[in-house]
Length: 260
Length: 275
View 1 (cartoon, rainbow over the protein chains, first blue to last red):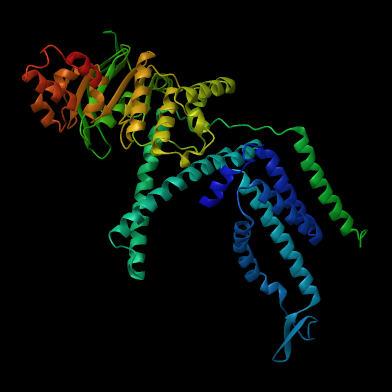
View 2: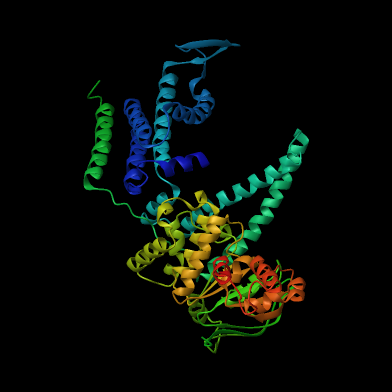
């Protein structure tokens, strides 16, 4: 999580309009999910990969390692879709199980491939967004979209607190390690428990201190803060819309069977 | 110079858990002065500050701002907190926003200012405290000294008449401490009354006009830095140290090298006087 955050802040297009980046990424994601067209999904995946590698500070090998996480998850959860149980032997792979067959039929394979294409392209879209846009900028976009302010304030405070609490947790863990904690499985469990309890107490204390600090700056129940705006130029908007339009058109053509 | 800005009369503060943090404290803060409040940990400095800013309401006693008792209504508190800013000891307990500009602008939005005014004021304070170079970084990637400057900017941007800093030098390296020292000087020069709490006698000795010693919820002494720091029994009672420079000049007085009426406040002054 911290890695994603660091990368987002060091991205060369961090200063670009978060609205533009969100439209590019979420728009492509919506195209993937709506049309479920494997060819378009593949195109979007490649496009997003190229954009991410170009505009986020990370090497291709690191990018693929980041994709590995969702890949393992998808592979495990899609087994149930890939394999079917039927009375007649499935076309691609058939394993006799008592009087029936367990295997992969061409229909189930196509379904699986489509699902994987949609899932991976969606992941690549979101990766592009989170690797180039820090959370604070995303909050600006959500605010413009009239997301409820309570939700936005919670996101703002939680996002900041994660880092403060992680620092405290890190310090506690180091001090435990210095005094030979975390040596065996048993001691790891007890150290973890102690750390969590200290963390809870500290975060309660901290929240009351933070409240005092906000109160001293005239907090009136609603958090309003300055947002750094980075307006995008018309050319960039047009390029983004052309890309989305092209993906939509291609999907519609493929759906209608005009190209095959 | 003797114009009284704020006055604390017979102030007592008891926490909801019945701990008595301040016991009949009397204090005056004069306009444009540099006041240092010294005391060991747990002596009640932070509680006193939160009372001055109206975050805590005195259990007993009264606080007057420009001769008027503090009005604890919503509107009165707004007025008080606009004039009295606090910079807390631990920046991590003060900074709640991940973006530097967002953090600094919070108080200004609460004052109900226009966005263009807010933007201009944030830009100005960022320049003044040299925050601009790291302004686009998120607060969690800033160093301790940078966070401290942002937390000072938080209050300074609201253009207070009185700025209170709780332990501004704690946990800072010498470079950053010196930078804060410099900022404190420019603040007083620009007409802001500055109150700081610390136990670093060496840093406070050249800076302060007046020193108040707080110990065990009471005020033990109130005087010029020379009076306070020459009083060894007082310093022992309050767990404080004598500034090194004062020890040196007293030794030089005894040895007859430095005339009795010379009280250097900085190493440079001492050098001048010895010439």
